Amino acid sequence: MSELIVWVHGDCLSPTNPALAAYQDAPAIFVFDEALIASWRLSLKRIVFIYECLLEMPVVIRKGDVAEQLTRFAERHEARRIVTTPSPSPRFKEICAALQQKFELEIIASEPFLDYSGKLDLARFSRYWQTAKKHLFE
Amino acid sequence: MRRDFADRDELIRYLKVEFADATALDDHVSSTRGGRAAAERTLEKIDPPRYAATRNNLRGKVSRLSAYIRHGVLSLAEVRDKALDMVRSWRDAEKFVNELAWRDYWQRVYAQIGDQVWIDREPYKTGFAASDYADDLPADIEHGTTGLVCIDAFSQELRETGYLHNHARMWLAAYIVHWRRVKWQAGARWFLTHLLDGDPASNNLSWQWVASTFSHKPYIFNRENLERNTERAYCKICPLYRRCDFEGDYASLERKLFPRKPVDEDWGDRFPPARRNGRKGGRR
View 1 (spheres, chains in turn purple, yellow):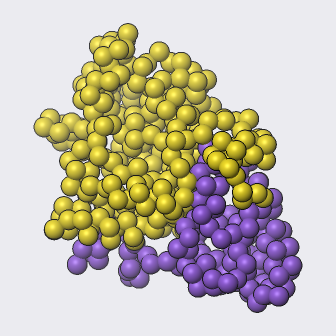
View 2: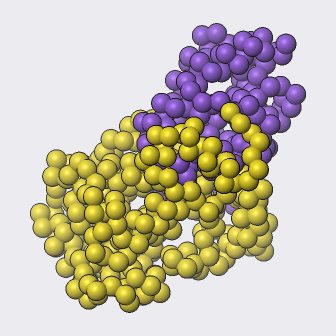
């Protein structure tokens, strides 16, 4: 029995993943999202690259429906909490919403590139950079 | 799934069976290795001042970190710190960090708009409507049989290695959208299939930047620009040399490509003669 599991996804494939670092003894899993691979039409070289990253990480590797696989893995470990890292992708949000029906979700971010919580104008890069530059180099 | 493999060949054989559909799309494997160890070795080799001076050239000192950054094998913050640690003044790493910032910027936009990265952010500024552009990528581009040595080489490199230098991406994208009048989405889907660093944020929004649906002007280039930034590698063996589609100055290319577009009065300022690198060579 384990209180929680760590979910590693494709936006944080490092052994320094902050969710893994925070819970080093927790069972961890990565799931190849077969529907996403099909809809993005990813080819073999990307799968090989990701797999090589995973082989340096302490994770169980599965493929299939991500929410379903995570649910099964968490239930097998009698976990009620799933810990992961953030992602801006809409797919990630969907999966999180499905998981939150059954589990408590914790998202741990690594150090941000730009540590700034004020207003950022994203209409054009040049406007973003005007603000970002001040905070990155001062 | 399995974790024990004697070597890379055994891993590849296994994955070809487990991911038969992805393999059927394209079964090349990149020489770029996945993993933190490979990422750290690549990080050790960055050279921010030389990057700033040579990055527009295909032989320039670019970092090759994109796939590692895209998949979070390295965080943008640690690459930023590494770059700043290597220089005496932050100004020597400014261009390098500025390019990292593009990734941060695209990610922030993605967080706001999600799947709308697939939709034109704004109308094309080419004089054409979106409906004037073809839906599908022409087969000669996909297979690298256009007869243009540069374009065919970029197509082949993309499919075989999963990587293209940023400038090659821009040239190839501009050719597809502006010379062949194909919707940027067709090109973006093709890149996503092959690029190890492909993600819908950086990829699609950069395509939109080239197309002019997320910028003020379409990005185009000419033979002179490509020839100089490739050390003539393609032009010198191209049977179409000096009569290819990219021949001419920017003003005449624009008239040819965008006949319905009003004349651009500040065109001359956009490519100062001293550094005609295609908008200072960058992606702006």
